[in-house]
Length: 88
Image (cartoon, rainbow, N blue to C red):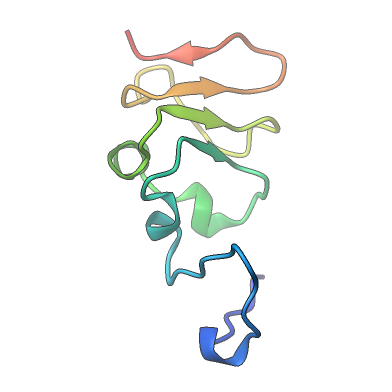
């Protein structure tokens, strides 16, 4: 399980912006890469991701997200072993 550490307890890192929640991290991002199976990321609705993400590319190489063909919310969804899936 992820451990939450208050930002003020961590040393500053050049070029790294710390945020309080996953959706805040998406603001202005062109691409989202899902690289962990953690439940708190899998449970974020795709419509919320689509609203926060500047670009529309979602990379889920390992298929951690349970995405149905009717729920892409206008995102270009990429998973290893499949073609790009988008909502028509």
